[in-house]
Every structure is written in structure tokens, then in C-alpha cells.
Image (cartoon, rainbow, N blue to C red; front, side, top):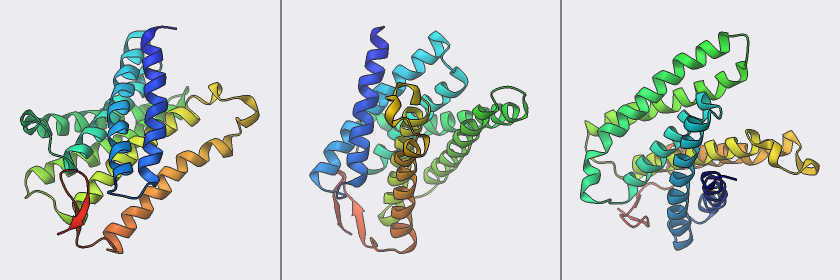
Length: 230
């Protein structure tokens, strides 16, 4: 097996484990912060390796390349929302916004064409999903660049949905996209869908709790990722 496949598999496995741990651990505590940082590093490694494999070995590039680019974008912008990065990171928001917008618009076009085609129509669904996330993410970046830095609930919401959606893409890619590698006795489609849906349900719950119910109103995430009173 080529080394890049090993890197992709190991990083993806660690990314899924640390992602679920961060999602379901107590927010702001040490376990959440440490597992979240492991998730960031492993997801970026997995996404870069996966994008390289798709581009150089022609492994479903129409789906895997945008998935890798979008995952990297979501993880980086989510981290930048709650954690101070090196000085050079100040130049990243605009290029990342443009990347998300280009990926979103490109996937929108290809997604519509794929759904209208006669073969591999299924690929149009993730492409349209990536298009929606990319365009919405870019619009959020544009709004942020024109406004004051986020504080309180909006800051947490931006961090939450981007990290969660990156985990959703990874879970979707493994449990559904790579179902053939899962042992036959447990390769039951309704069962494989559950961990993917769990990410979306948990994300929606926290968005409702923070944004609408306002149960975390008066809280923010410090530079170290700890929830504290404003």
C-alpha cells in the first residue's frame, strides 16, 4: 500500500475518534480542547492526503477533491474563530473566503449537471451539499470581514457548525463512502447511517441551545478555548 494511503487512513481514523470525543465531551474543559486540537491536525492531514490521492490517482476526484478542500477550509476557519493563531494568519480570511466561494459555485454547477446526467446521479447530492456549505461559509466570512470581531453566542455558533460539518463530511466519507471496508456482519446500511446522522442531530441541538434557546448567553470562548463569563 502506498505511504500516502497509510497516512490518509491513520489520520482519518484518529480524526473520527477525536472528532466524536470533542463533540460529546464537556465543552470548554481540557478533554474537549485537547481532542479538538487532535481533530484539527488529523483532519487537515487526512484532507490533504485524500485530495492528493484523488487528484493524482483519479479516485472520484469530482467528489473527493471538493470534500478535501471544504473540510480543510471548515477546520481552519473554525479554529481561527476561537483561538489566536500566528501573526501571518491575518492574511488567511480573504483567501479562505474566496476558496470556499469558488468551491461552492463550482460544485453547484457540477452538482446540477450530475443530477441531470444519465450516470452517477448519486454524486450530485454531495456536490450540492458541498456547494451549499461552501457558499454559506463564504457569505459568513464576508459578513465577518465587514463587521466587528464576533463575541458571545455568534462566535460559538460559527466555531460549532464549522467543526461539526467537517466531522460530518469525514463520517459520511467513511461510513457511507467506504462502507465496503467495514466487515460484512455489521455492514448494515441503517446502522452505518446512524453515526453520520448523530453528528447532524448533535450539531442542530447545540445550535438550537446556543442560538435560539440562549442557554449559553453570557458565555464566550477564550483564546485557549475555555468557556468563561463575558
